[in-house]
Image (cartoon, rainbow, N blue to C red; front, side):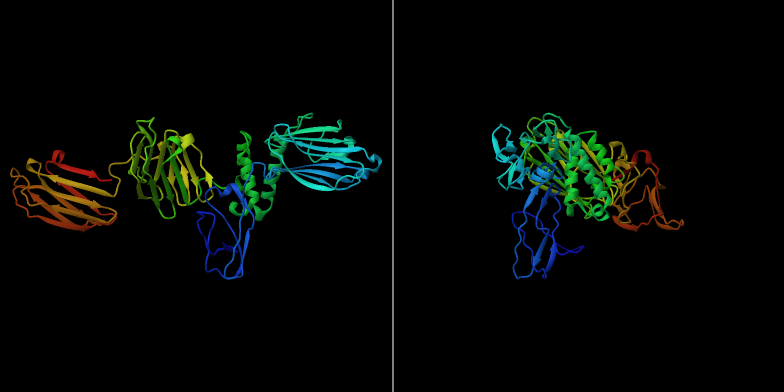
Length: 494
């Protein structure tokens, strides 16, 4: 609920009723976002709060591809007055028949001057009205009209008095017959191009939205016109669809721009294998897996999720083998700008759905999808874009210095994230064959000033000890081992 541009309260829709409380009296606008709300419009855009308890009902309607498409056929009579109209509403899939006068043409008294008939897909008549020159019934009726339905109009003077703004009337015939298609009415005599007219009206809507700043800049969640436009584009075939997407890109929500993304992996029978929610604002990925066996036809990895840091180091991996039973589990992984998310699904074209929850757009489908995490969006990348980890790049490093018999002389753990070097030395004598410096560790600051130094003479007994040295960017670490080729191990723990 909004008061102007300010969000007063927001609630998740989990059922048929949503309850708000402690809202001052006033008029508030309603916005619905997320899920599949981009495909729906609703009435009652405003709610009025004036009593202790208030109720308001919102009725949602799923947008049809032709929700913006309205067609009209006009029947004219004496002196070219409009005597009747047929209006096709693409959203409600309704034909409204309006007979506007009881005297269409007095020269045709007691004679059939016009007739309107509508038949369903099985050729059953669901509406018929004969209009005589006089004593015509004045009425308005709504009749369903769906794909495959047929409209037939007879007009005694069709040559000059049966009209439409579209080229769908054959003025050489008194009787015109149309069939309803996905794109609109097609005259069975003219064979008009309904698809081209559909695209023309969609283009007109797009131009209108681009031309008015307030409509152009309105969020799609608050603009039924933008919703209709987007649904219309999604119904187009290629190459028209891509051409519209390119021309009207300013009006369309960017698929990858947003803060929240949901990945839904389905298995055999479309059951849920796992669901991953990515929150860029919280820097968190949550993977929720119900108890399930993904798909018994695949005794190999059926799906997988892998997350890498900006260096290409793996932070998280989970494979889902089709024939393996998985227990219910919830896992969380911290993410930050520069990380990479890779998802794989053997049946990704049909059973992997990725939705931008910020603008309810679905991303393109594929077996493998790879994204780079950016500040306010995901960026689609290829596997070649994920860096190959470099041995010296990371946050955690471990140095193990060994002695005679490969026992541990000392161990140094470096944490760049914590800014510490921890040197742990067990009680030991490094190597009795070396009565000189056998190994040493030295740490200097960026100016070359010594911060820490420890020599390990081979024949000296050393007591157990732990030392911690603070590290900052620019410091130097020097490690020496006389048998370094075989007894000094340095590992990148990432």
